[in-house]
Image (tube, rainbow, N blue to C red; front, side, top):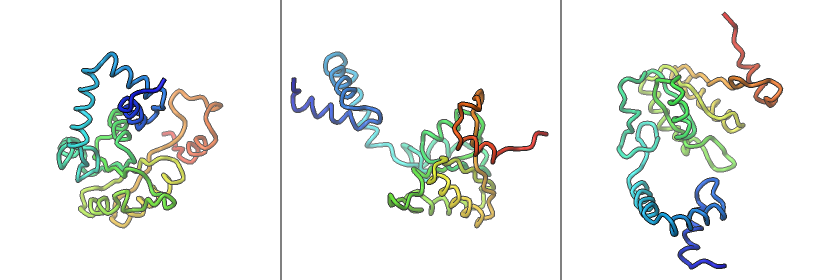
Length: 199
C-alpha cells in the first residue's frame, strides 16, 4: 500500500526525531491523522512557535526565549561557580541532582578537529570573555569521557589557568549500587584514578 504524497512527507518529516525510524514515524503519522487531529494541530502550532521564538541565551548558550535565560537570571545561584557542559540535557540532569548551585555554560558539543569543530564552534571566545570578568573562581568541567570530551576538558582547564580560575573535573566511576564485576574496564580505571582518601 502506498500513502498519499502529503502523508508520505509527514512520515518522512517525523523521522528527523532521534530514535524514530520509518515504522515509528508511520505509526505516529497515522495516529495523528486517524485519531488525534487536534493533537496534531497543537503539535504543529507549538513546533512553529518554538522554531520561531526559541534562541540561545547570550550568557550561557542554553535555549531561551529571551536574551538571558531563566537560570542565568537567578540571583540565588553561586556566581563564583561555573559548570561547563556539552548539551542542554546535561544542564537538566545536573540541576535535577541538586548537587550544583552555580551557573552553567554550554559548549553545544566538544572539540573534534576531524569534524571541523574547533574552539569557535564550542563557544570558547564567549567562555574566555566570561572568565576574564573575574567573577568565576572555579570552573567545573563536566564533558563526556570520550577521547574528544577529555581533549575538550584539557583545553578548558588551560583556559581556566590563564585566568587564574581553578579548574575541576567531575568524578567518573562506579555508579551507586553498582557491582564491580559488571562495570567496564574504562570506568573502573577512571574510578581508580579519581579515588580519594577516607577521613
